[in-house]
Length: 145
Image (tube, rainbow, N blue to C red; front, top):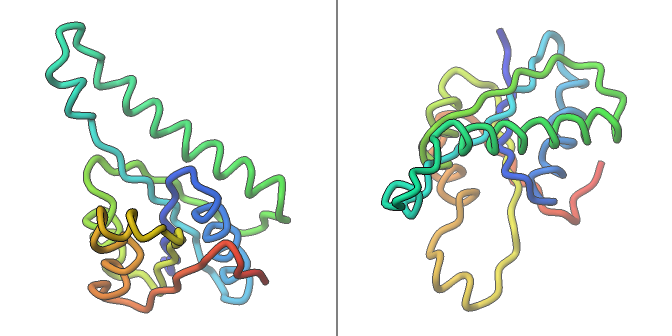
């Protein structure tokens, strides 16, 4: 199976990346767009006395993927197969794991303020682009097809 892996996190940038991946898949034969969303059980919930069920965190992650795919379906003529995957873990690790054997990884990139760049030394997009075992396309909200 030929795959284009695309990371989604509910942001506008990831939505642009998903649309870009769908457009790219149309130019290739037999390609499946694999939507990947990494999620973690929030640390405060692990320590809370009310014990937020782990399933709620996973349901929230699933709703992010569902909204992204539904929106892409409404905004494009979605004529390529979509395979949605929830991966418990950090985004970089999840995308790198799914990139093994993929033809392409597509990620969105958020432009950050100076403070944002200082707090988050390296972006997910940069980490994936530097370490992926296959070609990577980084899509910004200004990129259009």
